[in-house]
Image (cartoon, rainbow, N blue to C red; front, side, top):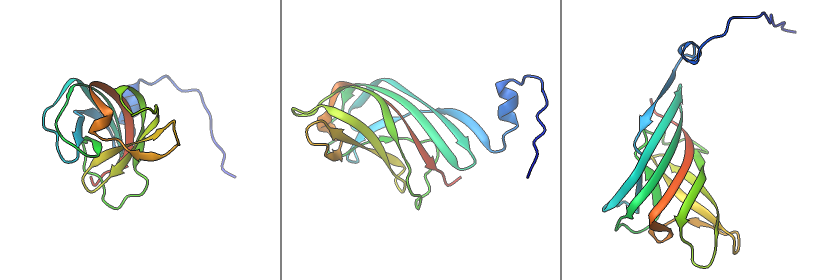
Length: 159
C-alpha cells in the first residue's frame, strides 16, 4: 500500500500550477463555419475560440454568431482548429452548449453534437430532432443569417 504525505502547503497561483504541468499550453483560435467544402459569403459578428493543450490532447472552446450564413451547401462544420488532428484517432468529438436561431422544418432541434473528421481537421455538426429522435447532419438549411453557436471539442493532435 502506498502512503501519501498530506502536508499543508502555501497557496499557489494558477500561473505557478500551469508552469508545473509538462506539455501544458493555452491560446486563442478563430473558429469558422463551412457548408460542404465552401465558406463563401459567411460573415460573423462573433468568432471567439480558446484552446487548452496537454501533451497531444487538445480541447477547443468556441462561440460563433453569424451575420450571413454564406452560399455553400451541404453538411456544416466547424473549421480552423489550432492543431492538426491525428488521422487514426477514435472518439474525437464534442458538444454544443448553446444554439439559437437554427431552423428545422416542423421539428425542434433537441440536441446538437460534433463528430471530428480528423483527416480534414474539421468537426461536422449533427443533430437529433424532437420528432423521431433521428440523428442527421446539420446543413446550410438549418442556419439563418443570425445563428449563434457555442461548444467544445476534444481531439488528439499530431504535434
